[in-house]
Image (tube, rainbow, N blue to C red; front, top):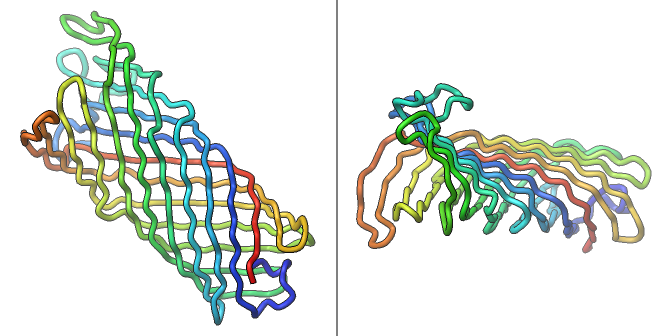
Length: 299
């Protein structure tokens, strides 16, 4: 409950909010030359600009404790994927983005879903009529999946980039599942009918997974992703439009840094196990959003 909108700052209450906006996503899927190497043998870049619906709550408890939760849901929009390979003798792994031997482009890519949910418990460590500082910690879960179909390619078969053509039908489906723990700080400043919120958080993933279905090769790659750092920042400006109703504009940026992973390969048609390659791959994700919304207060 924002202090500008309450007569009694010691009282408890629940803020409910919902917003609609635009979400930008970029995931990178790495296949490394060998265990321990940072040289890409293959790199897939998945990108989306999609509508996003956000909803959540902030509940003020006793003694300055605050329980908060939020969920961001996105799908559809405009997506794109590019796939690069560095295969000898026409290219050397890790030799740079301009030196690839194989490339495919997939404009017919769809964001099947994006879900980002979190729950946090915090404590107001400083609170006046105009300023609040809250320290918090919690758990977050991100689940995102793309599917790429059709496309064009340039391959190095008998010579450097000597073959080109088109794909038809399902190509690759890619999913990331990223649980994490985080700690954060949120600050709030009141100025007349306006309230300005700024927050930051840092954390680490745990038990993360990535799955890649190569439909034309009848293969499924299951990746167990090691712990990786996470970072997030957010800002919001809220205007008091009337009793218990406020409007706001908000922005958020999040980064899940690359986590290296062990990869197990299966034949998709019958589930037959092929092989496991330790420390052979990696996954990372970046997101940014801007939205407008409404906030309501329950006492």
